[in-house]
Length: 154
Image (cartoon, rainbow, N blue to C red; front, side, top):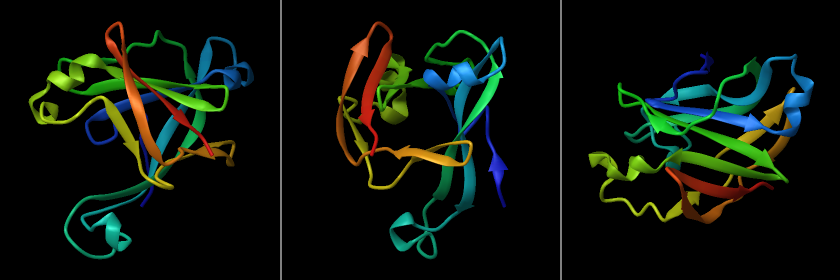
């Protein structure tokens, strides 16, 4: 079953902006990268999502044109985390609200390092792969009211 997600991915809303691709969108729209879930079950990714008990989500990112609106990383009244990312010079710049670190479920986490697992997220545009987030640990910067992470693509 394929689920198209634009507003929510398991209680986390991530809007991704592609700076150069917006020129290919009609007026008053902008390019966003949308996460499409290809597989969801309660098995462990470590075991290829075929056994064990955990949550396994597999999907991919696609660029879409959506109506323009101002960007802001924030936590909504409903507790949803809204973020966005820019595709700049072959890197993904992820923006999340700084107040995320204050939520009880993340209070014990080290929010200074953002870890990307190997081959975890790939980005596509018009069914052509733009790149995959490069595995590694990335330093988190706090800029104004946002956590900003710059992630390499490979």
